[in-house]
Image (cartoon, rainbow, N blue to C red; front, top):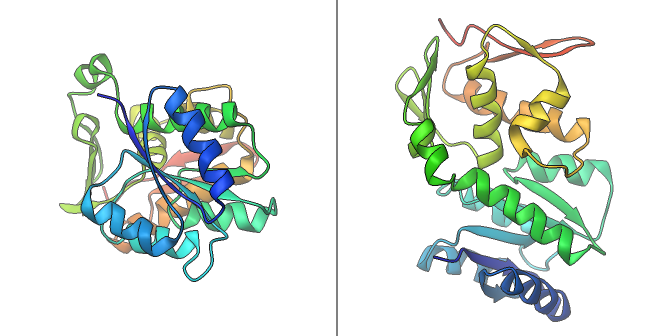
Length: 232
């Protein structure tokens, strides 16, 4: 079955370009012009991924993502006309999976969408391999069902965040450099800045802290990150 992508952007020309590129890549698309319509569309039938413009009027993409994350972990690829670092970090901390600035290459956008979809919907072979669960302290991950919990309390991670946590749990005694964390999360040649990785780590820490895990990921200055005791 082809993936269904929701495209939310107030510029009809941008919507047309994105939909054409995604449909040419074999995906189905549904386009809306504002944030409210995007939330309504997700409420009717959740897509496999949302391409979400940050700069929409009335309700911007960040607010749409904030509301979505209260009830859904559908992957989000942000679009923005601004390339300022603060926008990128803010977007990812709101729960986005990746970030593309305008003007963009349709080919790059499709590549990024495919990377996120592979993370969110693993291939059958990967699902079989990940049939086991990962556990460290009170933190448990079940990759096949994309389920996570701490001390029995459920956690909602984006696809990228889940991949990062899984990478740590697979090597719980290792210090992982940012390049390794990026490779675990994206598994492609797409460039991702170190600040983007830091933003994902910060978001993961916040989600775990909210359920009582205050020692999830430790920073090893000048080297990278190490999995903490996770309440164990």
